[in-house]
Image (cartoon, rainbow, N blue to C red):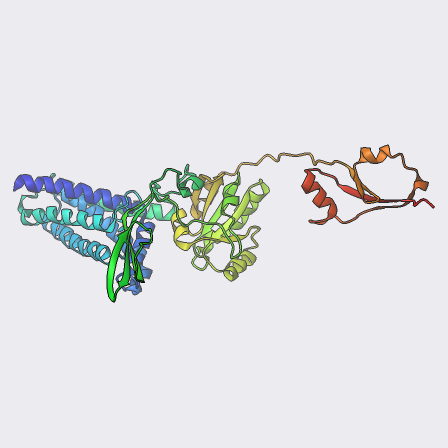
Length: 441
């Protein structure tokens, strides 16, 4: 029993510290997961949603501290009882989530390791087994140090956890496990490779054959059955390849600009998943920053899930020189754990990412302006309905008395005659003269 307790003590303690630290690195992300559990579609306790962040911080700190307590042997009975109650609750939660297919990822290891609902439940059952060993063998859990050292280590672990949790909330996670981290290319993370495995699905077709309903299973093809079609059900046998970014976009209600902006070389992306809930102090800092970025040659855009009316109001109130585009709220919460947060991208690659508290740490370089000479092929002539370039016109050697009239066409709008000729011939004529020759008597 002593050996079992010792092994269980190490296994459970280390696992709780690792799991808790990963979530403590990103308590805001864990709070979003708790909000998902609290929603009407899952546990139906929406009144707890406003308190999700506070609950998140408490749970993850408690998880890490319990792991430390267990390893050093501080207050064994309190520690083991706390571990048991916590694992019983989470085992119920993961079973409920898996059985009713409510939450696709429990968030047990944050974004570092994604577990399916049934994998999460299995993990909790294994932990429950080892914690029960600790529960029945609690007398074998002895402190590693004397009372003073044990108390100091316990208090120190709590203080460090509290400081670290506050630090990442006021800045950004120290370790970024998401598909928007510095160095990642969003275009690549949104793409599906050509040879990526496809999902394998099973289709169960129901037909009414001679008054009796019969089922036919295929891989998707419509079965050849002499009967009346009733319905079909699909079941995923094996998941296919899924890109790490699924729902990110940069769009308006009319048009999608995602590929256009991700192709930009120097793009500043200001992210606010909700302008209604944006930190006012952070919003105030954006004006000077965005103006400086624009003056240095950056393209600046905003991204928010808020409505157009709110976007226009915020833009007017703060005199912003950039526009806000639309993106899914859940995606924006994943992009950056700050409201607002700022990213610098170069052709889709994240170069810098900061919390609004650290806006001054984002280094803006002056973008060299490449001057390109404007191509000018000169004047185009329309002589009695025939189009000639300048050389061809001069070859006619026309005199004033040969021309009844000559007029410069002022029309230069998109779709004009000159514009159409330039587009069709890849030319760059900048003026157009219509000449009407004197008619012979």
